[in-house]
Image (cartoon, rainbow over all chains, first blue to last red; front, side):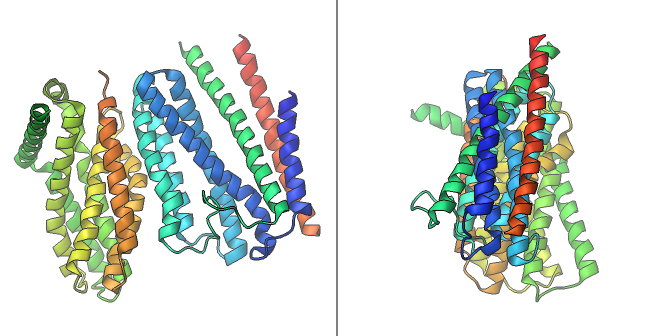
Length: 214
Length: 224
Length: 35
């Protein structure tokens, strides 16, 4: 119980500090606040979808249905976090550039990711038979994740976009005020724990479904 | 080992020829694709008229027509196999990867034939400005590769499910959106006289990634 | 300053509701697991 409360307090506290205490990023002004939700959401999306793909590979290798549980759960959660990232991004776009949606390369990429994993969910829903479903969605999940890195990391480097500097750069540090950086990473950590929790819950539900069906 | 490789290649070639022969016998897929493409072309050019001064619209139109013609006609490659139960027979003589490779090559050839008919027609009917041939063909070619790779893979996956037709388009389309985006951008750039390098790179990377990963996965698609 | 308090309030509310919902979900899962 304690760690659950811990997650709650952690994220709540980060929100409070981020919104009340942390300064604004000069270029972003008031819209700074969104980044504490938008970027962690996008990051968790990639983590979740990567985890899904990993488990899909493991499933094809070992044919252990528990891997399929993880892959499916992670894909669902990735989809949800992707919706969060898209919506927060749209809010950000509205306050910064005046329009909710512009088909900017970055916006377009995240939308494509949404559609690709929406298709994954549709695919899963239409296959009967546990093993067949696991096998086919594993293949699709691997293919789908092949598309994600180009979309999220390559597109903004190739096409010019209005989106602020890709934060997800592996090289140098972000030029952020330390307070902002702290809050940001804190939120990232909080979201990661939240994702783990939700993932384990979802997997438990899958297992129950299988047990009840048997 | 040279023997294994050459017999593999021979198998793939045999499957390719068998696909071509089956398709040529009925030409269902080809007819469907060309009919679809020509009809949609006609519908648009009839209502919108010629648009020599709108490379953005032309590019979008071309790719959407090709994309949907492909989606309408390519789902059946594996489905036909499942329905006529010939897949089992095939699997006795060839490995899943060989089968997939054969079908992939067939799909590429199929698309090329469809494009050979549709693209010139498109250029004429819409009154498109002259194309920079190498650039135009590069973009088209790379896009075709991705289209074929994706359709082969998704076709193989979908053939084992129940709701085949709609699902094929629904699952393929998101995967193909990046191809659509760069294809349209590149085609338009080529008409605008702008560089196409970025789009070519993305298209090439995507095609390679798709082809590479899908070839690795075919062995796992069917129960052994 | 004012607007930030409002945003914080809303975010905390949303987060609180989400958190409670997840807790409830977990409780139900645990119940079914016990059987």
